[in-house]
Image 1: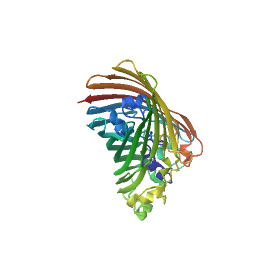
Image 2 (image 1 turned 120 degrees about the horizontal axis):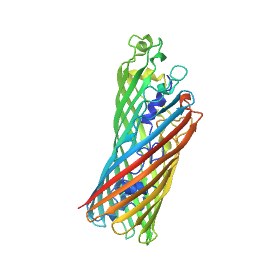
Image 3 (image 1 turned 180 degrees about the vertical axis):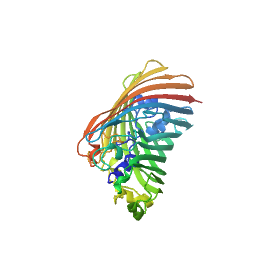
Image 4 (image 1 turned 180 degrees about the horizontal axis):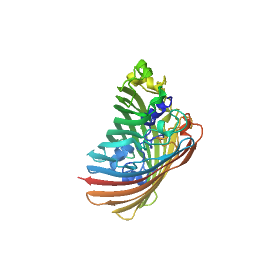
Length: 426
């Protein structure tokens, strides 16, 4: 059953800050203001979520404030295998959230920020009764997990300070707690004599630490340049592997020492990145932004797979190879102030695919990604409310040379996202 390492990788090999590009695994920006201007926010973002996205910008916040973000995601994920039919995601709704706070210590000179967010994450569920292909373990049923969930919570302290009248800088930490769950159908007939299918369930969690630096330079009146660099974050996971319906009297399994439960550990790296944004106030009402980001997705190297007593179930393949490539994101965003209270926003973000055909993993969004966002904002004396909608579109991708034949076929992957942000100033 040589496909198991690839299937474990469907969950633990998803490094992203996003799937492939650093934007992809939690995917899109979490605040409504950032989502609407997704491709042009680095130099222009003024809400408290800048703590993580563009920390030097928090010096522009003049009063203590707390920002709460709530989102609704609805996905349409479909797989059409050339050898074993089609299936689609069964649970299509996700409800992420985040919270940020900014405290101006010395107004316009020093500010502190803190955030709790889920910048990396993934959740897919497929029916257990997926199509069965020809041969033992050949179809989607035995190769595509029926459940794959990756969650990472980032605790983000940051400090920003003014260097000159036109230059601000900031530094912060990414303190990440991550956990994943994966369940898949396992054909115990791979260990003769033939018996009915069972399951393998893997659960693990771990911590990682990274850091980032940012700067915002107003090099001419109304013209800003924002820069942020992030270190990669390595997370070591440990947990348990449990089997369902493992044949207890199977001589091969007994000789190999396999058990109904075992330990599990591995590690993965969320990639580092470097981003540059240009912001310009075209008029007193119209602001434009243009962003570019490079993500070190090639940091995903071989991922060790240690199943303890159940290591024999991997048939000697003790690591998963991703072979992902570095990628870029680019886009633009615009904000138009109708008056002092109301603002309209729009934006576009392109994320380049980093997943090659030969190591293609259906549970990771492995295609170029396009994010189209629109939004509206209301700002009162002590409160603000922002609402945005984004369409996340991955063009249908055709795979013809995957190492796992069942993964050859066509893939549709898209999301509808609504984000609501509530700001309270003190």
